[in-house]
Image (cartoon, rainbow, N blue to C red):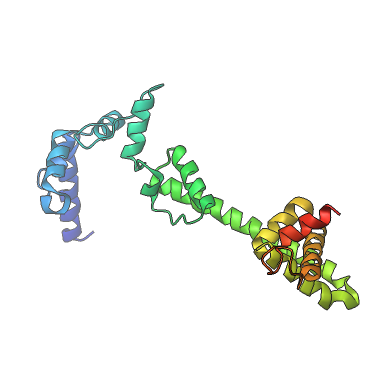
Length: 228
C-alpha cells in the first residue's frame, strides 16, 4: 500500500473513531444551510435522531407536522384528509366534468373524501370504463341495426325514408334512439319509428281539420283517427 493511501486510511479511521457514539447532531454542525434552509438545519440540530422512535417523533413534531387522526373522531379524520388535499367541494378537484353524468361522478368521488391525487385516478378510471362500455354498446347496436336493415330487401330504400321521417317527427337523436332500443329492443324501436313514419306520410297534405284552413297537426290527426 502506498504511503498516500495509508495516510488516507488512517485519517478515515481516526474520524470514525471520533464520531463513534457521538451525538447525531454533529452531522449538521458544519452544514451549509443554503442547501437545506436554515430553519430545517436548526430543527434537525435541535432534534437528535438516535433511533426509529426519535424519527417517528420528529415526523409528528413541529408547526408544520400533520395531526394524525384519532379513532372514531370524524372531525379529526376530516381535518387530516383536508391537510392531504381533500377540497371543500368537488369543483376543487379541477375535473373537466361537463355532462350531468360526469358531474355526478365527481360528486361521488368527493363524498369518498379522497385527496386530489387519489380522486383523479378514481375519476379517470370510472370515466374510462363508461366510455369503453358505451363504445361496446354502440358497436352491438350498429350491428343489430345493420342486420335488421339487411332483411328489408327491396323495401330497404322506402323503409329507410320512413324510418328517418318517424325519427324526425318526434325529434329523436341517434343517441336517444339507441337508448330507446336498449329498453324495448332494437327491432321494436325501428318498427315504432317506421310506424310513425307511415303515419306522418299518410297525414302529409291533410288540411282543414284545424279550423284555420291550415295543415292539421299530427297529434290531432292521430287523436281523431283513434275515435273512429
